[in-house]
Image 1: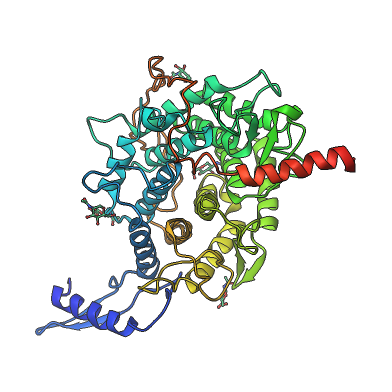
Image 2 (image 1 turned 180 degrees about the vertical axis):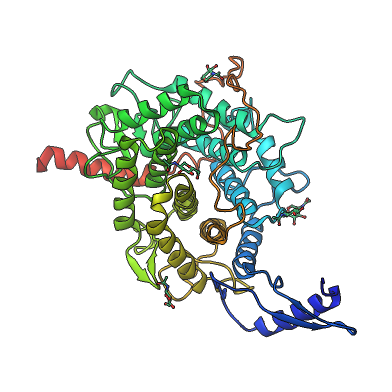
Length: 482
Ligand SMILES: *[C@@H]1O[C@H](CO)[C@@H](O)[C@H](O)[C@H]1NC(C)=O
Ligand SMILES: *[C@@H]1O[C@H](CO)[C@@H](O)[C@H](O)[C@H]1NC(C)=O
Ligand SMILES: *[C@@H]1O[C@H](CO)[C@@H](O)[C@H](O)[C@H]1NC(C)=O
Ligand SMILES: *[C@@H]1O[C@H](CO)[C@@H](O)[C@H](O)[C@H]1NC(C)=O
Ligand SMILES: *[C@@H]1O[C@H](CO)[C@@H](O)[C@H](O)[C@H]1NC(C)=O
């Protein structure tokens, strides 16, 4: 019953020829598949499976993944696997997005590139490799931990001679927990790890939210309550500072130890909300519907929707990095944040299923919005930054493709199969092995006094410039305004 190969080839040729002049993606989220009637010479064969019902989503995501990977050359001879030019943390973010892409589409084209890069950067099984660790912040490291955690949750292929994905995530947890700093503000993770780094005096949302989410996911996967206790501790501490304001449900980007964590850099970023709301989702599920976490989910989702989905489109609203897209001020880091909110919200619908009806229309509208403006580059399929704009806005970097890949991949979640299943756990089929002691090697500590020798500080600079502006404004307010 399978049509001969040449028919598919013919179809693809005709189909693609017809597409030749079409700019951007023709994304159809409910593509019913095409009824093909084949004349094979001796019988008529109908085929519902080609193109498959989800062909439109898959091909859109595949092109975007391909365009994203064009910026990566770490797998070429003589290059450093896992390392992107000018940034270290984005490598982890990129692999996380690719693992999710594989999970949702089953396209394994990049699996060996992902494995090579992630294992190469594993350091002492804690994603804190000596080569880069002297300039890394907690947020840089945690993204790689979240990538490994994602790989564990979807049974992404492992290599027998390498540590498990789960243990690599545990290694990040184990190296970050000892950095919990009670010498200022009664707790919290600092943004930067080393005193010589600008940002050492700051405690920020992404570092604390990142570890909160990681801890919650480890609890969910392993059922080890120690992780859940840490998750709750980080959440509760955050709520004593402007980083997490319960009740009004806002997340400030930064707060400064020099102001006893009373001041606040209030820039609003999608990924900060994403880390906390997703972590609350895992805790909600882990505690079998705990009220505290439901309040957190509902509160933070409300603010997330109000803040970051300003524009109506089709049956939903389109996601926007509102602090920097309208004014065209997004720095390199900020351009990929939407990938994380997209995928974390999608997974949230599986661990807190009651959120599905609210979240899915927004993810769908965002994907349709994104697709209509992906007409940049030579192939006229590179995505720009502003999904709410009908036309491509002129940007087409790695980060723009990463954000778009995140929102395209998750559209598979409404198409059944295994793709709408919750992240795996150790007793629902997750096979990644636990090693609660991973990453605890005392020999592997870089020299604290070592000066920065590399110009490569992009990851560490996630919000420095913006923070400084916000901080000056806050101080000015305290001095003259209040
Ligand atoms: C590197 O990975 C890309 C996919 O991103 C692949 O097309 C290319 O062949 C790989 N190069 C090498 C040298 O393996
Ligand atoms: C996923 O892809 C693999 C090959 O990479 C194949 O063996 C498997 O059948 C595919 N699964 C589904 C559900 O399509
Ligand atoms: C936890 O996740 C599972 C898997 O999706 C789901 O069946 C269950 O309803 C969730 N628990 C709660 C309290 O929503
Ligand atoms: C969503 O919008 C489209 C057209 O904009 C419409 O045809 C469709 O019925 C709507 N779907 C739902 C579920 O409201
Ligand atoms: C639970 O996690 C903690 C913290 O990593 C660890 O010390 C403990 O051994 C773990 N317990 C089990 C049963 O794995």
